[in-house]
Image (cartoon, rainbow, N blue to C red; front, side, top):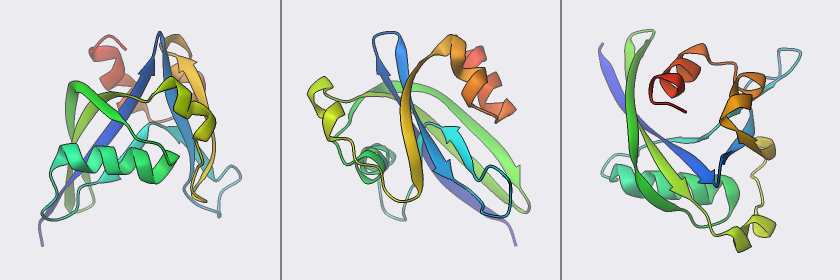
Length: 134
């Protein structure tokens, strides 16, 4: 059976830094956390813009603001196709002290784009970011 689903990514920028979150992925590996941007699946009937803002709030417990769409992607995972939209977003600087991660996330950090390779292990994502100049 063919399946397609939509994911959205919130790339939160402040000055020349970007917010990365460390998400739990699997407790059967030595380091069960991976660094990534805020990321969520779009629910049936939900607009992608609404989903990325929901994802930011659900992950960080603060409101986000969409600045624009910066790239799209598509990849196959088994017999499913994931199509994605990456949004450039922001949060109010005053809200940083109110960030409260859900239990699926271990920590968060602001990182300059030159440091992405030190955090992000997903080579496809790093290539996408490089292709758009991030």
